[in-house]
Amino acid sequence: MNQLLSILSISATAALLGACNAPPEKSAAVGEKTPYVMDPHSYARPEEAAATHLDLDIHVDMQQHRISGSATYHLKRQGGDSVIFDTDGLTIDKVTLGDGTAAAFTLGAKDSILGQALRVALPQGVDKVSITYSTGAEAKALQWLSPEQTADKKFPFLFTQGEAILTRSWIPIQDSPGIRITYNAHVTVPKELMAVMSATNPQERSADGSYSFKMDKPIPSYLIALAVGDLGFKPTGTRTGVYAEQGVVDTAAWEFADMEKMLEAAEALYGPYRWGRYDVIVLPPSFPFGGMENPRLTFATPTVIAGDRSLTALIAHEMAHSWSGNLVTNATWNDFWLNEGFTVYFEHRITEALYGKDYNDMTNVLGYQDLLGTIAEIDSGKHPDDTALHLNLAGRNPDDGMTDVAYEKGYALLRLIESKVGRPKFDAFLRGYFDHFAFRSITTDTFLVYIRKQLLEPAKVTVDMDRWIFRPGLPDDVIVPTSKNFAMVDGQLMLWAKGTPAKELAAKHWGTFEWMHFLRHLPAGQTPRQMDDLDATFHFTRSGNSEILAAWLEQCVKNDHEAAYPRLAEFLTTVGRRKFLVPLYTELVATKKGRALAMEIYAKARGNYHSVSVNTLDELLAWKGTKPPATF
Ligand code: BES
Ligand code: ZN
Image 1: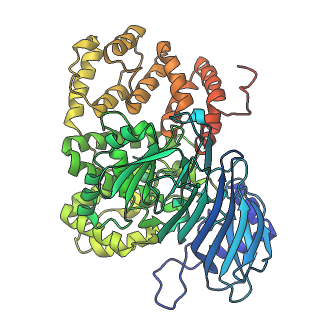
Image 2: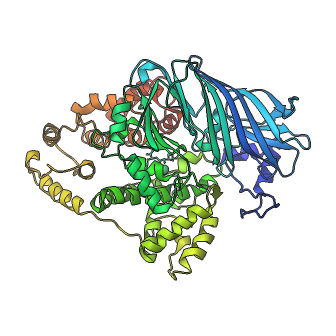
Image 3: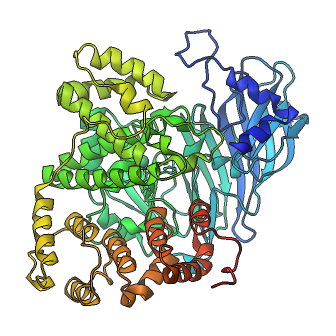
């Protein structure tokens, strides 16, 4: 796209072109140069100088909304006379070399997606640099929350979100998933707050607000994460536990009581958990995702707390990333399906082990419905090729191409392969895959070579991998999932369509998934009386289950059920989870009246959202400024 073209056209970044000539990925023999893959979303040139370890020493200023300090890197040099880092909105105060002398550095032109390249000149033999810096006011990874935006309303809160390319907005870094580093961090925060990271973590507050962290396994930059708040901790097992604001810890620990069992189920499937502890931190509701698989410490939305443990598959998903994603990582964002498709498959295997087949049949169908919806949407948009598993995101914000396709089409491919070779062979293959590529970042091509040799050829099965991976759309041999629970729901939907009153529907024993299926399939054009009847009988508007509430609110907008609008406005101003926001705002803007309401709500809510959600919604709503356009 034009952004990339414009940076390519400036002479100072001719170096970028060098990266395009990087050798194709293969495993390095001893003494050979480590090969790296060209990543269109990073300025780094790891084939010349790659970071191997980071020592981070930072202070978090909760009042000024600024992180400042130093990032010291150990480098592996393989040629060239400089090292390049990614930065976005950072102020670079100085750069020194291993011996403390000042280094010459330059900042390249600003790109709205990639940020700026920081190039540091390296004399021969130097393999250590230290960058003193501070973050900018609009750092995209960071969300600074006032006490009012937290659950307990007493203290401010900060969290980071690195994936996909946001880490560069709070640490100068080689921000490519193909480059792995270990890290140590020293972080100071106000002494009434606690800091946690994707590393070894404290379980209690320190006396002076000073914390030290260690991540001794090599991880990609997008998995470096930090949260600061008035946190408490509660164990849920010997290796697992929950962090949350003090007032939320107990509820969260109850909801996630199965974590230890999930971890055991995961290990029984695909081998030992290699990261030591597995904890979850429940963040304030503005967290833009359901969960983020930061190693040793999954970041999670509080909307996963339903009060009945029915939404905890999300924890199984993030935990599964400890193998698919964190151990074996997509080398570029074009290979994102390697992270998410495998993780959805693994997630389903964990939940099947814990909750059984009926449960999984339902989540399979819901996922398949999501996939069909997403494909239809992409097909009518600007990038119809985004329904291929392997993406071409060069020149685009990688976030824009990260859709349900990677998750659900990726999952569908793995299920197809599983059905062809049989579970025992597929499980043995996956276990071997995680072992073979442990702590490495791989491309789709590397995966393809491996699976053909290790599984498809020996098992003598044919799957048109190229069709599935490199071509858009859903191939005909997809396995269409079904669920007997949902067949029962469909029966009740028929009765409802024929005019049966809500109280006569056989819905007594329905759980969250049945309700989601029911609400997704309400016939179009519900009358005000029907909407009132549903709500009076099932109390959706006051549901504490975010999935049920979001599905209901979507129907309320579609059917103009105004009685629920105060709840809709409240939901949209407190919850920042993009997956819920996008469908609701999309439905709202479909009508003139709804559009006015959307703009009114967004004007109030925008300040409560993380940049990831703001970025998507500004575009969806054609947002032009801090005030609603004059026509409203
Ligand atoms: N790694 C993703 C979140 C993500 C994706 C962040 C792309 C940035 C860019 C995480 O594992 C995830 O998939 N979360 C899902 C929940 C899951 C149960 C499907 C989410 O946030 O909804
Ligand atoms: Zn995921």
